[in-house]
Length: 204
Ligand SMILES: [Zn+2]
Ligand SMILES: [Zn+2]
Image (cartoon, rainbow, N blue to C red; front, side, top):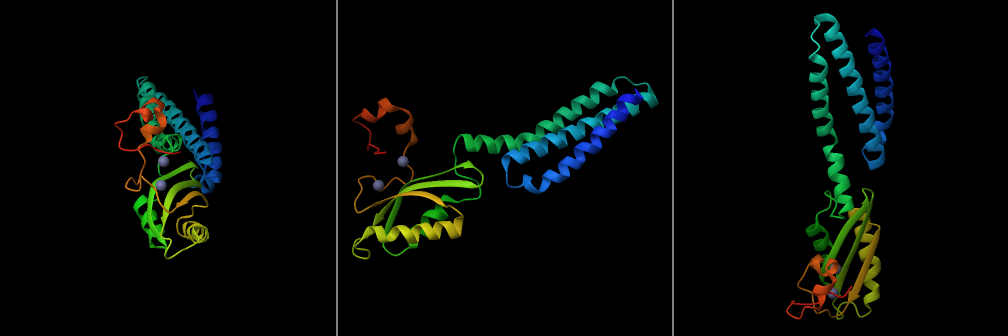
C-alpha cells in the first residue's frame, strides 16, 4: 500500500512539474495543450491514488478506491471537453471563435472601391493559421484596375485580424452576390448541383 502511494507521490510531483513547463505554450498550441492536459490528468490520477490509499489505510473503507476513480473520470472528462471541442471545430473547418464574420466583411467593404463581399469562407487548419477565401465585387469607377485592391485588402486583414493567408476573387460582376455564405451542400453533394430548381449554381 505505502509503496503504491510513494510512487504515486513521485509521479504527482513529476507531472505537476512538466505541466508547469508546458503551461506557457498551452494557450496557443493545440498539441501542447493536449500534452498539458494529459499531464494534469496524470497528476489528478496520482493524487487520487494517494487520497484513496490514505483513506483506505486510515479507515479500512475499500469503497473509497472505486469512488475516487469515478470522481476522477468525471473531472477528466470535463477538463478535456474544450480541447475536444476546439479540435472538432478545426476538423470541421468552422470559423474560429475569436473572429467575427460580420466584422471582417464590414472591414473589407469599408475599403474604397469595394462594393460587396460574398461567398466568404473562413477556417483554420490549426488555431494560429486562419485561411480566408471570398469574392470581392469591385466598383470600377473608383478603382479602374481591380488588382489594385488586392494589396489594401491583404494588409488590412493581416493587421486587423491576423489573417495572413487569403484567396480573393476580385470581380466586376457576379451572379451570386446575394449569398454571403455559399450553401456548402452544393460542394458536398455533387449530384445536387445539376438540379435545375436550385436558385444558383456555385462556381468553385
Ligand atoms: Zn462572386
Ligand atoms: Zn463558396
